[in-house]
Amino acid sequence: MRDFLQGWNQINHEIILSKIAALLTRGKKFLLMTHKDPDVDGIGSMLALGRALISKNKEIVLLTEEPLVSPVIFLEGADKVVQILSFPDDYDAVLALDCAEKSRIGFSKAFVDNAEPLINIDHHGTNDFFGDINLVDEKSSSTGELIYRLIKNAGFPMDLAVAKNIYAAIMTDTGSFRYSNTTPLSFRIAAEMMDYGVKPWELSRRIMDEYGHARLKLLRLALDTIEFHNKGQIGIIMITKEMFEATHADRADSDKFVDYPRFVSGVELAVLIRQKGENEYKFSLRSNGLIDVARLASRFGGGGHIRAAGFDADGSISDLKRKFLQEANQVLDDLSN
Image (cartoon, rainbow, N blue to C red; front, side, top):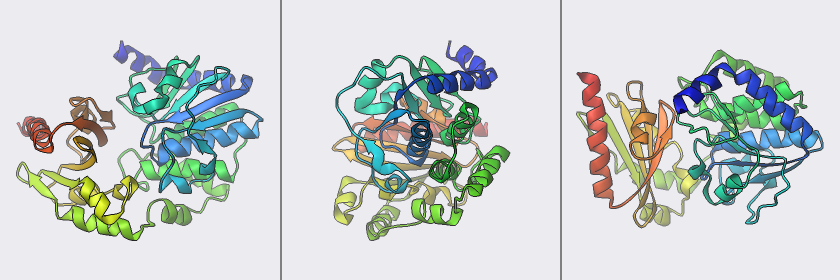
């Protein structure tokens, strides 16, 4: 059934876009949310669409599971995002943005279960089509790109605040237009956002290149953990709770650390293991071209993109690493045969 939905969805993107645009035009009140531990694409998409809806005199609520941290806290309109515990039942629609599955929404999953209709807008190939209306396009560089298309389809106003968030979403999810998901449309949208006044150097500096002292201290400790497996094809870097505590760093400070083993010559699969709790870990996976890391992550209940994916795991780190390496080694061995 999922393959059928995927195929139908690919053919009918414009029909689905128009359907969502019509619903947003008719309705008056909407709830927007994204996945837990939100990134710039998720929050930027929420803020861009939220701003566009407000400009049409719609009432909106922008919801996250926890308060925002760097770098998403610096996005235009981030102060409008809230954390609430009760679900009013008078929304005309609930929109889940950049989220591949219900379980990734966190405590606000209850809001999704009560939603009618639920609109799912995402670009992950592992999306499970959990919405009543599903706009899922894995060929899109980002959810921000889909939000741009939705705003255009609906005829909603575009201003500098909307443009900043769309640009930031695309910029970060394409790795500053360096990753393989970068398309001609990505560049065209980015150029149009500059026409509205976006300054790429300014957003890049604030969102991607501005580090605190804690980040550098954390990086120094993390680099000492790098190890290589499978004849140098797998590079792993790890961050423990003790490292976070010793450096007074937070989760956002470890963003992009997975790139350090990825940049090493000969590495095909880079892995960042971040400790979240006593026996709770987050595995972030990056591929340099051969491995479909979304498929690999799905073996552990996760998902994502072909080149960037992840999963959460509970247990002792030695057991988790052993099981992961068994699967990853097998994938690499199969590719070499």
